[in-house]
Amino acid sequence: MKRTITNYSGVYELKSEKKQYKGKADVCFYITYKNEGKKVWEKIGWLSEGYSAKLASQIRAEHVRSIRHGEELPKNKPKAPYFKEVAEKYLEWAAKNKTREGRDDEYRYRKYLSLPFDDKRLNKISSFDLEKLKAELYKSGLSPGSVKHCLVVFRQIFNKAIQWGFYDGKNPIKGVKLPVLQNQRERFLTYDEANLLLSELKNTSERVHDMALLSLHCGLRAGEIFNLKGQDLDFENDMINVSDAKNKESRKAFMTESVKDALLKNLPDSPDDYIFKDRWHGQRIERISLTFKRAVDSLKLNEGIKDRRQIITFHSLRHTFASWLALQGETILTIKELLGHKTLAMTVRYAHLMPEQKRRATLDLEKAFNEKRRKDDTQKTA
Image (cartoon, rainbow, N blue to C red; front, side, top):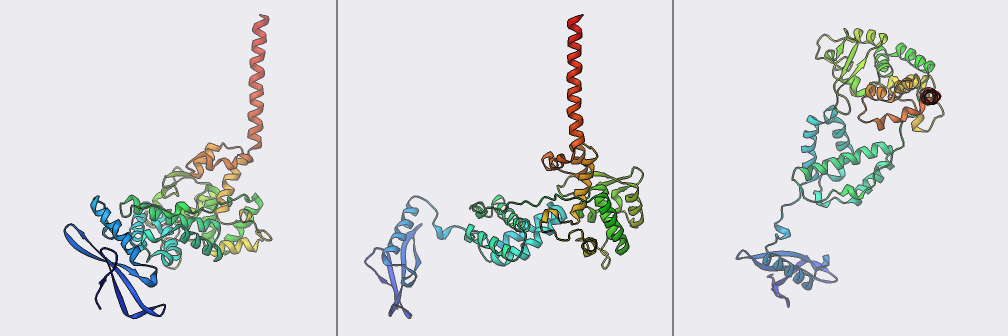
């Protein structure tokens, strides 16, 4: 069958020989117009899809108006890239520019973002799609922190697409409220609990014991411990160079005697080799062994505790390190530098553990005030 002209200028219809709609042959509408001197045919859609000759005429009028005013027709605009195309380029960039060579971002993309978004073009991903993903991640049992990490990876991938000129639209994440986290560790180990935990670990895994000691005595994150190499250890000055920190800024940590003994025992043959390696493959360790959790469970340190902020994890050792420093009166600035925090705002949470320092500061203020007043009184009577 041939297309036939309708009552609308430049609008044609074609009746289907196979498709039916409401008991009659379905009808497909086409429009024709001239662009740069050439006649263009464009399929608009089927009657069963909600199109009509009148609607096709309106679309044609918009196209003709766009051509007349030098605007780019929607059909001629370059198509937005697929999410998977941009994601792969982002992961290449992350491998060179992010901590842990972007492995965390790659894991979250492959596990949580790839399936729902890979085959969608960027302009077809909406805020509603992200809200749906957020709900599904919560339903699967992910914590608010993990859900937020996934959404942040999505945001970064999309932002890079815009920044690199692959896409000129808006990031749909702007219409999504990210989870508000209340998961800062509040509980820290007492000296007795720390000693019990280290003893338990030493009996089950000396390697996990030594890593725990590094976090407890030096404040190192798990990832920073995994990244330590022989060349990072300065035994002459008892210092550790933390070169692959979370915030990409190097810092110095200082060895205690027990830490020094543990590191000497684990010193690799090559300065470019990792201190702690995977026992089976001899590669870089990726996560803390379940041995640590078993030790915590054996000591019942988390028994009956439901609040995530009160549960003892490996990261609690770093939190304990900072808390002990605060309790012994070290300044917030000292704690900030030893933890490798980027801003004081990240460290100020430990200020409430410094009652003696605050009391001393208040008494010193009174002392200075009284001395000034005595000097003034002496000058008046002289």
